[in-house]
Figure 1 (cartoon, rainbow, N blue to C red):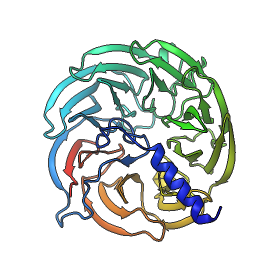
Figure 2: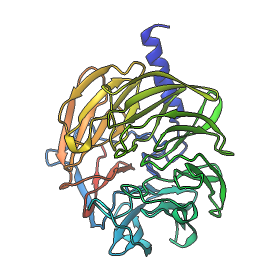
Figure 3: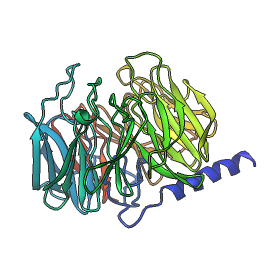
Length: 412
């Protein structure tokens, strides 16, 4: 099979694995409908107005790195106001509050950073699942905000405090809610009944990372891929059976795994910083074969990358050291282009374009091509500092900095 056919096959497999049902223009969970950073709509403009995208509405918010999520015309905002972790439901078109739910929190960040929730909520089948900085998992009614059930996972699984609080965004897979808990009891990956909160199974003794799991059907098997503190786990979502383990973490203790694994056909891409780097694995049944690994290709610190047509686009290097923005070839790890000292941020895909939201609040529209870095448009969306992932739904982008949430119109 020649090189062009290999890349075409990867591209087609990416398209098949990311196919979504009716509400592809919603953004109901971390990294969007397919949990891969891809926006399913075709309504995004290929240029910005000279004055930048039109501001639709703006709202003051509390602390938190949790990103907004949008479904059925409603937005869920998870943030901290005073001593309460607060879940707000807003009209996505106007920003008007529809309901609010909150509960007390005593979380304190040991490094003096933000003390709000880190994990992005998930909206599925009329329910909202949130995971707070202290490990409290809530299930709320999406229509009213009524509490349906709650689990204190850190108490239940004897979790010791990590560097930056619990950050795993809930993954709803079939009848379960899956989380990387990482306590002293086996809880590297835990499945909760989505209707009741009851623990269905718990697997692995790995500690928690700051990454979020993803599920996909690979080699005929439905598998949950979870990048824990120690490395990548592949597990059966029905019963927690560990199919494979791939160690992938820094040797130093003061390090994190944060980027979400990316699945393309039978390939899984993982990446971490701290002299760890990226690896591409081929999944065959219950085994994972390393295709390549490199610390010089694409070392993700906090932000996840995206895959498009056989190429990976993302940030290379430590967040505090001014990472570069890069494109690499998925099959080989070859660097196709790199913008050095670009700065940190997040990257999403809309059609054939990357939407790059930098930490300083600047939004860039970039061609998602391997030939060269092609900047199409840019605009200052909000003042710094932007750490949360944005949401892209119905042609609108929702982004939050340290004290405000903005909605801007990106429609054609």
